[in-house]
Every structure is written in C-alpha cells, then in structure tokens.
Image (cartoon, rainbow, N blue to C red; front, side, top):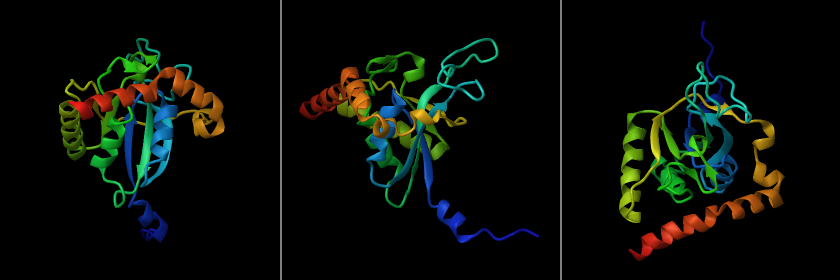
Length: 192
C-alpha cells in the first residue's frame, strides 16, 4: 500500500531548479541570492565525467575522466514569482556572455559560461535568450547550452562564501573586474 505524500512535499513541487555557470561560483551564487523568487543558490560542479569531484580535482582530466567539470550554481526558485526566461535574463546580465574561454580573471574550461537545460522547453528558451542577448550587445554570445548533468555540491567552505568572508570576497570580485566588465558590456548595448 502506497502512503500519501504529506502536504510539505507538495509545496516542494512548486519549486524549480536551474543550473548555470558564469565563472567563479562564489560570484554567481551571491548574485542569485539577491534575486526575488530565488529560495536557494548552491555552489558546485557539473558537466564533467569525474564522480564525487572536489575543488582540488573537478577540473582535472585523465583517461577515466576525459571531461572536466565546470563551476556551477544550482538555483532553486519559485516559478510563480520568477519565470525561467527572467532567470536567464538576470544570468546574462551578470556574466560576460562574449567570453567562452572563462569569465573575467578566471580562465579555462572550468570557468566557461553555460546553461544546463533540463528539457527541450528550457533549451528553446535558452537559445532564444542567447539570440536576444547577441542582438542587444551586437556581438556573438559564447554561452554554451548543455544538457542537464548531475550536480555535485561544492565543499561547505565554498557555500555562502560572500557572507562568510565579505572582505576577501569583495577584494576578489573587484580585482577580477567582474562588475566593471558587466557594466561595460551592457552600457555599450544601451548606446548602440
């Protein structure tokens, strides 16, 4: 005999999940925690072939693990308050959508921008948003649209890094030029 699900489990059905990569996961996590409708943002790794990746090895490859993971953030949100297209609008305005070789001062495949789509509907929306951004900034967009892959949470010391280490976080973010580059991209888009 199957047991009926309790009411709180039904409430969880009202939450949706998205996984995005935009360089340093500390920054992406911190940015998304500010967005209305987001209930959680967790730093982690996805897209690679290594099981149980750690910060020390997520980007490593070898014969058994030929595909490196990417630093990502798993976002839990309420679709009644925040639509998937609006979530992607926010994502694109907080990264450098033109740089597929990494993001800001973080270089290499582990830092490349990506959207992990859960289904064909999300793929269509992500493709449309990418085209909208390319038209707005008048440059090609280098954000990969990838099929959803297993999400591996990062170590505890990476979670909520901006809140736990505000001075270090601000110093890193400023020196990396993240906000300055994002502002330059979207300011230029406004004048074109």
